[in-house]
Image 1 (cartoon, rainbow, N blue to C red):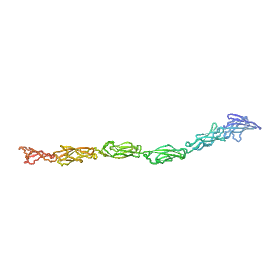
Image 2 (cartoon, one colour; image 1 turned 45 degrees about the vertical axis):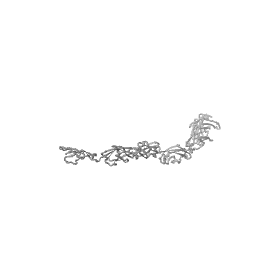
Image 3 (cartoon, rainbow, N blue to C red; image 1 turned 90 degrees about the vertical axis):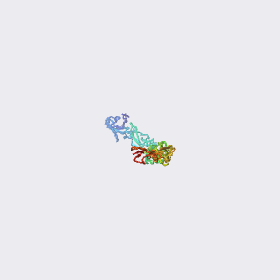
Image 4 (cartoon, rainbow, N blue to C red; image 1 turned 30 degrees about the horizontal axis):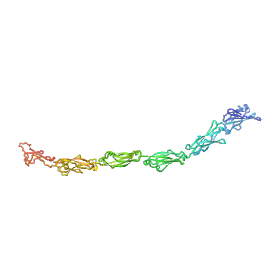
Amino acid sequence: TVSTGTMGRQVLLFIWVLSLSVVHGQVSYSIPEEMSKGALIGNIAQDLGLGVERLKSGKARIYTGNSEEYIELKRDRGVLLIKDRIDRESICGQTMPCALHFQMILENPMEFYTVTVEIKDINDNPPTFERGEMKYEISESALAGARFVLDKAIDDDVDVNGLKSYALKPSDNFVLKTMSRGDGTKHVEMVLQKPLDRENHEHISLILTALDGGEPQLSGTMQIIITVLDANDNPPVCSKSEYKASVTESAPAGTVITTVRATDIDKGNNGKVTYTISKSGAASLFQIDANNGLLTLTGNVDYEKRRLYELDVQVSDQGGLSDACRVIVDVTDINDNPPSIKIMSNSNTVSENMKPGTVVTMLNIQDPDSNDNGKVMCVLNENIPFTIKSTTNNFFTVVTDSELDRERASEYNITVTCSDEGVPSLSSSVTLTLQISDVNDNAPVFERSSYKAYIVENNTPGLSIFTVKARDADWNQNARVSYILEDSSVNGVPVSSYVSVSADSGVIHAVRSFDYEQIKDFQFRVKAQDGGSPPLSSNVTVKIMIQDQNDNPPQVLYPVQTGGSLVAEMVPRSADVGYLVTKVVAVDVDSGQNAWLSYKLQKATDRALFEVALQNGEIRTI
């Protein structure tokens, strides 16, 4: 046995000398497959101890029978060369060892040699799978230890270059189990070691890798696609444990409140969620869509009756698993209530002498709305001596704002208007009637600051001269006026002996007959007094003027007459015309025209001699 070269060639040479000059020898070579065409297998001439000339002269040739010729002989060089590509797998498959057997024949003399060329495997074939992928449907309820048979890989190479191992990635849920069979193949299984969760991974893609033992190492892959079948292993879960929503109290039925959302990560009916709420009590005002969780209003909510609703929502899947959440619905206020005015205490009558700040009415104002909608401001009508004040929340008082005067206004209609601060604002009003009771705060007042009256002398006693009149602005008894003649004297005589006054009517009567020539005028005071307690009064001066009557004849003062004798006057004969003879002087105690005197001659012996002046009583010659 001879070892030659880097090809690891081994030559076995057996030479038998037979009869008939037939030489039988054997040579063996070992080459790797897939050598290139023309590559040198070995120097057969040298290995058999033959010269090149012998090969030429013996017409050396290779006899392969019916098998394909992969090797050729070069006689001129005495070498064996690769004639055609040698693929070990196509020649021998999995059979080991793999060799080509042929004969080299020579003539003259005839000789033949057996030649064996062992074909060594090289790692030129990766492991392969018949299918590029395998598909499995595995329930997520499958228990650990479940086994799943995988396709085996095929590697045409043999021995160390053949299939060596499998690898599975990722290996989160499965591990590989391989077993060697009697036929030399490796049985491979995928074993579930961690339960599947469809909700995390509904589809799992694994790569099964087959590895050989060659150098360099070759591999082949197959994809394993796993569809995880759902099991009802997840309850529905509300997206929130508590929902908050609001609705105005004026919202009509059908108003959407909110949407409750729940998810069930299961699939199909296992993941179909149904929503329900209790229909008892206040929840009857609401309904929820069983399919989509839409919560709507079905009745009328009133902020003033209830401001908050808490609804319990049940969410269930088709497999009997459930969750619950709560919806808190705030009712928001709108300004739908005007202020309510209640009279707590009210005075129908108040005295006019009440001081400013006196409470005449107490009111309770309620507005059940909230915030600005429930804030109330109250005002009174204008031009009245009252104001309204807020004492505490919801309580107001109407008080006098200035001095009252019944004589200026004996009754007030007080209109209280209360408005809230909503938009638009709502208001209510109430009108209170307040009577102002009288106090005796006004004295009687005469119609004139003073009176002057006239009476003709010689009147009849008891004659009504005239009437004084006083008015009192107070009411009832406080305004009832009595007239009183105040004590005084006239010429030393009490005035009551001259006149009297009627207490009720104020009529002044003459008590006596007056004589103008004795008294021409006099004055006195009349008091007007009311019926209040204490009474108030005022005075007025009355002046009585006595008018003259012509009740006195003229009286001649000159010349003085005595005993009816004539009065003689001496006139000189030489007196000129117009000579003053005498002057008659007369008086009349009456007054005015009644005292105006005129003179005339009543009787004369000769009218042509004398005349009397009409106005002054002078007698002159004419």
